[in-house]
Length: 111
Length: 110
Image (tube, rainbow over all chains, first blue to last red):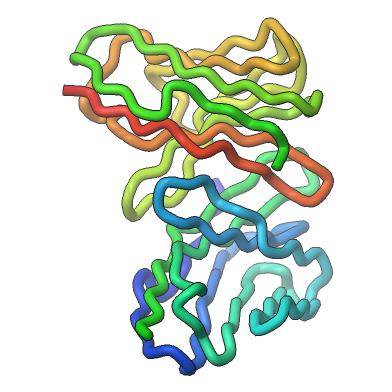
């Protein structure tokens, strides 16, 4: 069974600060996706990275896929209260369409 | 929005009763999934389907069964609900850019 571990589990910061969320595994994934989930709703896809070492930017969010495709990070610059939510990483394999999810990082950005 | 509707949104049921949750999609996606979400465990795959009448087990399939008689509908059945099945259940489909999830069903087994 492939496992994805996210850290930290919870992060509370002030508006304007930066934060980084990590997603680590001992397994290699063909792709890594990041989702954000708000209370009462399903997760929403933010980004997919597929190449080792790949970096993608989405406004103030920067996503990186590790060179060995075993880990990933999400960095938010100048966080805003609207960034509050549960961030989930998910790894995909070339064998099929199933994703393995990490346990999630709950982010709270205080105004 | 991939046109995914889950029903019901909330349900309270008694231990030992059968429960069926429904996922309906309007965009002809081939793959459909049922996940459960519990604090500290993230999302765990229960069952998935890769076509009409084609289903397979996920990592936490015990106590659950599924059926897909039409492309648009994927049903999850708890044969005899237990308190450990209290959870939030999400249906998902695979689109061009990753999974799209429904809004979830919060199930409480008392």
